Amino acid sequence: MEASALKEQLLLFRRDDTLPSDVENPYEVAMHMLRHIGSTDPVLRDELIYVTFATWIAHGVFSAAQLREILHIAIDDEHLFYRLGEQGTDSVFTRTFSVLLIPPILSVDRQSPFLNKTDMERVQERLITYFKEEKDIRGYVEDKGWAHAPAHGADAAEDLAQSSNIDRSGLRQLLAALAVIITEPSTVYIYDEDQRIAQAVVTILRRNMLELDDITSWIDSLQRSNSRGTQTLQETSQQAMNVRVFLQTLYFIIRTEEAEPFTFVRIEIIKVIDTARL
Image (cartoon, rainbow, N blue to C red; front, side):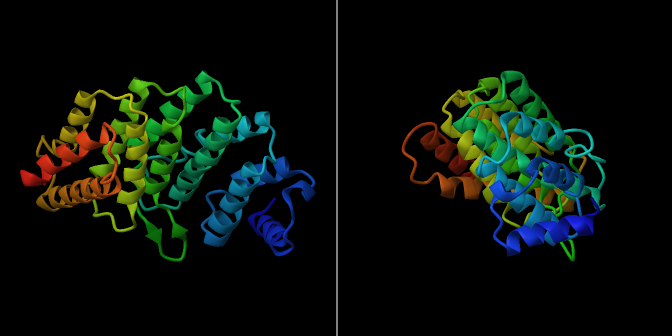
């Protein structure tokens, strides 16, 4: 199905308030949506394809086998890893909207498990690699809408962190992957990336599986990110700004949390800010 025909069909569903149960073959429509998930048309990509996926997944339109297949397609080389490493090209939309399919699918799995440990390990491995290799961190792209890789990736990390299949080692790996986007040196985040990343970190901390040393080491790693001194002065300044804003945002979110490890994290954040190393 061509993009224009898909857009017309999805607009028709929305205009007529078509119930998912009234769609003749929703899985076939889903396959068409996956083929056009990286469209540069923000209405088709964001308002229609993504919203339709999220709605249908939440309403139980797809079987467990179909959801599992959609998940594996979303994280394959033609979607999450599509031309991974490019900067400033339209390929980013395929990657960043593929990663957005992970949260609603994992949400269903938490309510009624259908993914096995191998599935979850695969999602974790692909997501962590994606964090490390995604180079296009643009937020809003004029005329084409949201790219927002750091925010979308953080949303996926937040849902993955809630899985019972993710152990302490897995949580540490997720934190390390999030550190990569927190310490971005090429620009200062201005599209609430800090909020989305902080929410993912809070979810990881709330599992209460990390040792205090894990947390201290991770916070220290945010400050040591330019230890080799290979960045320009501007890059160092931008990176320090991203780290500082993130830590302040994290502190604000957990300011009323009384349980550990949150009180410990607040103390560690204050230490960092007081030493004026950022």
